[in-house]
Amino acid sequence: MFEEIKKKIEAIVKEARDEFSSASSSSQLEACRIKYLGKKGLLSEVMAGIGSVPAEDRPAFGILVNALKNSLLETWSSRKPEFFTRPEDASSDAYKGIDATLPGRIVRAGGLHPVSLIQKEVLGIFSKLGFDVVDGREVETEYYNFDALNHPKNHPARNVRDTFFIKNDVLLRTHTSPIQVRVMEKVRPPVRIVAVGKCYRRDASDASHSPVFNQVEGLLVDKGINFSHLKGVLSFFLTRLFGSGRKVRFTPSFFPFTEPSAEAAISCSACGGKGCRICGNGYLEILGCGMVHPNVFNYVKYDSEKYTGFAFGVGLERLAMLKYGVEDIRLFCENDIRFLRQFK
Ligand code: PHE
Image (cartoon, rainbow, N blue to C red; front, side, top):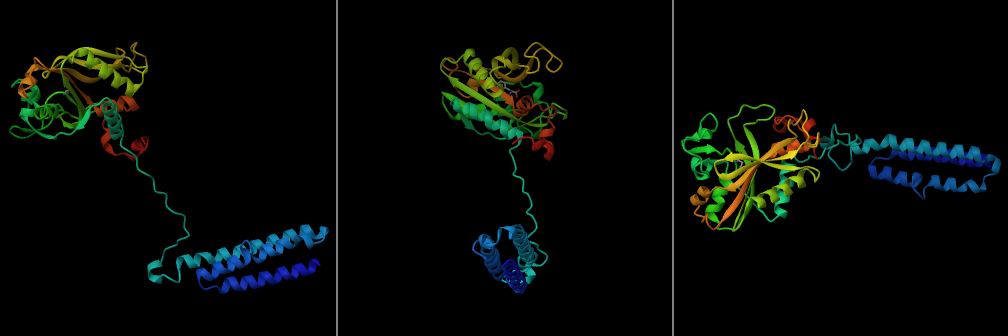
């Protein structure tokens, strides 16, 4: 009985080998695979016969059937690559040298740049507060960048050593504040906008300075706006961005286009505001802000008796450095993939 089965198996192996080796197309090879190795193939048929094998012969039967299976799989897989590299339906030239059985190359998906990530987050917070996102221009006139923002004629920032001039009166904007002026020239209050864009200053680059950086500008003008609105909105923004555990502090500052002006800072995450080697006095300065100067309103023909407003400007790289713990601003423009890969 067992001898019979053995013979049958040997016959199948021989027949299969012949058929597998004479297959001349991938479809013929596939037909062989189905015939012998498929769910209802000959191999399964032989296996199903185990019931009629005497108990003492079953272990030997198992070994035999396994050997049959392995031998068929081996024959099949040794021929398979031939048809992938030379499919009968492709001109052999087109497929020359291509081995379609090689594993595929892993394509890594890209991610957003950390400055784009923070920009999305910042604009998202202000959009939820009802601010419209607007755009500005990088090449500005001296009028919009300085004059209409109440900079006196002899203001040091107008110096060619601080600002990139393209020609007389035309420059690369040094901040996003000219956007305020352009918006107010066009729309009447109430105004509630944020704008983002690149700014340029003739700074030598070091760990915290870059001649090109990104700023977000905000402006809110309406009747009855006062400093507590400014504090409320910016405290909300900063705790949203950095976490509710951080304290926000406002200290007096100076900008020609705001009066009073302030600097907003958040408590250092390392020492919680007590003061340490990282922060010095417990706080990290983040943004400039203030109540729009009446002279700026005069330039855009807003009635400063009727309307008041606040504005702020914040560097995106600075925010990203504080939020992600980046110690050198230059990393943002070096395009080192090892750095960028950390942000997704
Ligand atoms: N434009 C200022 C700067 O670049 C920031 C600022 C914007 C300050 C708006 C007050 C109001 O430093």
